Image (cartoon, rainbow, N blue to C red; front, top):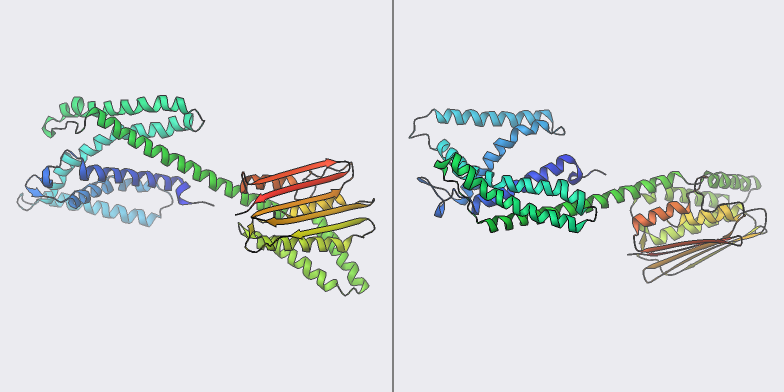
Length: 413
């Protein structure tokens, strides 16, 4: 299950969008190059004109990097490159026109020097602080639960970034380009607060992104577990039932067709109906009844007594597929032997709470938790419960005096 947000190119795109929005925000409201009323030299530019110029420059700067993005088709890369070269060629042609006709290029050039370049320099310390925070501090300390250490490093990072931002304009850029009059537009305290705002916003976004990755990873794992469960259905169950059907057909038993239909319904349910994340609880219970009915056809009452109790109104309730069936299968796998035994399955649903319990006789040499012998297994069900119903379930099993008991409770939405 691949989604754009967790694809590395998708994440890069989100980063680019974030910084473009940040550039536009500062171009519109905080840039030093904008005079009162947006008077730009002899031309009056609206805020939208400034934002348009800013984004054109950003696109021109970023366009060549499209060649590093593998998923984009080659012809699209060539089209974008052609448009970029056409734009550059048009700019060169414009620059050759007489000065009185050549007014667009000077405006773009002056905008770049007086406005865009200021915003770009302003962002350098902030971008450095943000990626030091997300790449090192969050992953090494905050994600590991070392909150105090993270805080002790993040606060100085904000202060240092603010000081560097202030010094960059007043001690470096202003000396290198005195004609541009680049001085810090903000006080040191304001710069520290701005950097802190960026760090806080990106930290929350990063944590949400990690949480989203965890949810999707768990969901993929649950789907994989379900696919594995489908592949682990005990083949002995199929062979035994086919043998039973064959014996019934030889005897001319009138119920042969009915048993074949039951087996067909059972297999259809397991292989196809369980493809959804949730299914009707009523359907899951119905398949348990079908499964028990099929098992009864192949055993004799003289050796094994089967008791199935079902209580509650299941209408509208839904559950993850193949949670009940493995527990029922486990009963018959270990509860049928040469000596007399009993198998009890109890299903109760009330107040959005499902209670499922089983009780069966076992041979002392058998391990009812063993799930490596062809059956689906209780331990696999336990894994899926932890994935699908965290903090909403209880699963207990005991093995005493030749009786194996399973007790499961699930809180259903």
